[in-house]
Image (cartoon, rainbow, N blue to C red; front, side, top):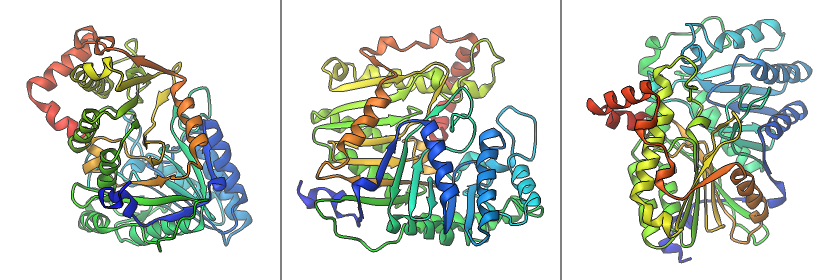
Length: 446
């Protein structure tokens, strides 16, 4: 690969010992490992997630954190969640204080409290949330797109399938921890939701605008390291908004430099235009592309036809409409096997995977859904991996095989349902959206 033609190899890098890079294959493994790392922490724990839910799994995580804090009061523990998401109930549920009530209750019950910082990326949740990922525990980073609740942690009978990676790397952990402390927690727009007194969103709106502006200029800071033949190169990337978004640029470049094959996972099929363009160009130059996306029934917004319909239940069908349109436009590539589309479905579980593999050499771990919302609105991050000596090949192949075991290969776009076969309420909703041309707007925020 010629360096001047591949911007990715010019990125600053951190050296990763491949023996200290673990790939977990299930939500249950993820939960067990997270609890184990929390209980054995000696210096710091910093969890960042879209939300930490007030349910059995969420309370188990909170209890583990609080027990660790009571045993070692000097242990530096902090949690960051989205400000808006933490202060409302579930979609369709009655109005409530949301998860913030649980944070406050825990703080009142223990001698040594733990701050739960609400990070307001935008003045309203619909226009942007904290979608940053990564749990820093001592010198390790546990990275997953999962939030913390029953289904993400497979606490009961169902799970939401994601990706789960553990990297022991002090330089990476320090860089990500410093970013969270300096760029988020230290900002005046960020407040502790575990306290009884906190400002309203309206009161901090000017501060929220300043925070978003600062985040748009922010990046992970670290001293670049040389990579030996026994190591893997990793680069943490962060981005928010359309302009100067290093993460978006990195994802596009990742597809642009593909020579042989690309493997993409996304839970909500709705590529942003720039990424769709790179995928199309890759197909034209003969790159084999495999895309794994959740079946509409494995979408976390899916509502069974037997249940009461809510507008939010139309989303999985809108994503399938996009997928069918894409498959139809690329039917020749599907026929030639240059394009493979796999639909994931396993019992009544749901699908939340995202990430990219290129030429078995470059990989991206990310919480980015690879959709316009991630591209423009949410605060996102990722870890770009360069494995030039195939140290991680077996681990990543095991992960790919694990992902594909519950998928169906789409051989023609006709395998995907037409709008005419959808439930009546869904048909009416889609036609209404299309008639008023709201689909163009929806595609930008979904």
